[in-house]
Length: 240
Ligand SMILES: Cc1ncc(COP(=O)(O)O)c(C=O)c1O
Image (tube, rainbow, N blue to C red; front, top):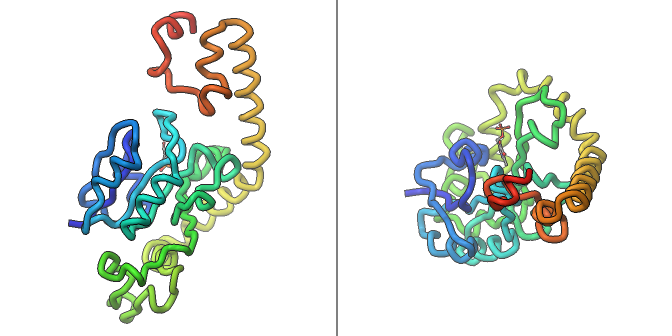
């Protein structure tokens, strides 16, 4: 049975994974302190992708993209990374081995709350043809596109070509306005993220100055992303 293996702590795995164009029949659950090692145990002939978030929402956990990419590639499987929380301003997963990166545009990228949408960025580096048995979808004729074989026609861009042709063709017109609005947000994302980071750093400094240990819990030096409230100690919660 075809499936993806995903890192633990995704809140809405089915919705998020369906962004990526692979049908979701079975999602492997991964837990533990060493996600790359746990993921490796779950990859089998039915695996079509490994899926993780650079920074998990809501857990605030940080995935070792490089290690997970290494494991996925060792088994001839692409790594799909949701980079919504970190944004490309703070983290570029393709530099660490991700094959495909996805973003929800309704958060930092869009920034203004007017647009529903997502983005898929294909690195164009995954060799779909080398893994023809696993990826029949890209290596066998597609009857809905006059027998087109995506990997033959588009090479390493087979994945994004299929996303564009199969998924974006019908609602193209209603997406046009959404796309304009998303693009307007993306133009300012670098500036806004810089400001968010600056504000977080100031909050951290203020916490550190006024409440010692709470400050260290959300401190940049010890935790690059502020911990979810559940991770804060009882003493910290009582003080906050
Ligand atoms: C990391 C992450 N990816 C994807 C999504 C889904 O986004 P959307 O609501 O735009 O479909 C969310 C929503 O919370 C999210 O936090």
